[in-house]
Image (tube, rainbow, N blue to C red):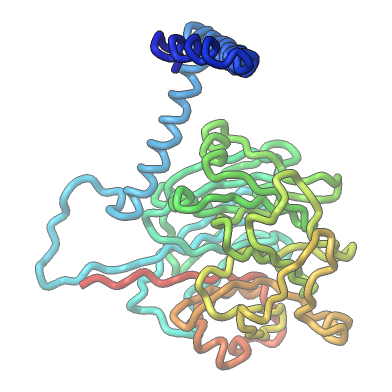
Length: 397
């Protein structure tokens, strides 16, 4: 700070050593220039405040933070804000939600009681509508307190608590009873993502089916959610939106393609602009993306029921973009028609749901599935369409 005492010191210095005058004047000139620049910044900020633009920006930030805080509170305490009396000797029933959806915007929700699940069990069979393979269905398992982001391939988004989806009986899941979140013209529902814990991560990674990637801060995602638009994340006309993955900077991000090629890289090394990070064959596309976290194992599921196990340390992180990727399937298996339908980082306590082409849904303890090496055979004429892994919530007495 320049004050009278400082000025007196400079005058005394010039009187004692006249040669220092040039340095002192230069210092004063630089300081005046800094003050002038700062004055211009403050004047611009005052104009923004007077015009309301800055106020709108701050209000938007506050609203985004309140939204993320509400999501976390829902995870910790549930959505119920009033007490429910239960018999003292009756334990709380822990359930997880099974979602089945397709590109037409049809979404079904059922509940699974974790106490009643057994590995290899058939939990339901979907009926109604066209053959499942033509509908390209997907599955997701989430807790009851989750918030969902519906991502359309136009970049449009929609959010809702999972509890707002009508609950159907697992004994009879029928497409005719599905909730409809109808896409606009030339638009498809690309993915549904749990987002309640997004504030615990630094980065959101958007992926296209052809292996293009971009990353941005999760704080930006909150703004996109408010605007109900996130962008397509694609650059090629033939490409489509695949989905999102949350990560922290030092975590290993993994993409897996249908033909068995893997791209992996630490999250902070991924591009901030849309870029092709893995060069896929013309018939190939991405089927799974995830971070390895603290999980020790990787599980790959093929359409013919094979459960392939690899340790996480088997992965070879890429050192550059546009690589061919690390091959998980041999050339012989690819030529024979073997394809991957899903993959995940797992441990032995995790579970997974598998959707078969005849509409059957089976649930599996992944520790047992890793040991067995294959999904128990059912109808030999069916194949596996998709796979979703999940962690069973802690049971409370």
